Amino acid sequence: MKKKCHIKKDDKVKIVAGKDKGKIGKVLKIDYKKERLVVENANMMKKHVKPNAQNRQGGIMEAEGPIDWTNVMIMCNKCITPVRVKLQVLEDGKKVRSCRKCNELIDA
Image (tube, rainbow, N blue to C red):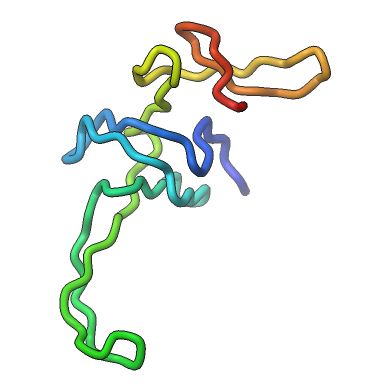
């Protein structure tokens, strides 16, 4: 079952809790089952890789790890701050997300 989340892929978010608190990045991937998301250049993890056909040398790779989606907030482009989101229904019946502080539409 897909759980409700106010964050979508390619949103600009700020991490508000954890070891990477204060970092800003783009959402790369969302896992609805585990309620986690991957943010660009945040929660970097090291993984030891054996040499194989694609990676001849092997070694230590660094990649982004998942973060709980309660630890991030969407960045508003107008206020330039992390904000909560509210849903608005437009005249044509379309649902869009907007900033609670300045009522700027997040979904363009």
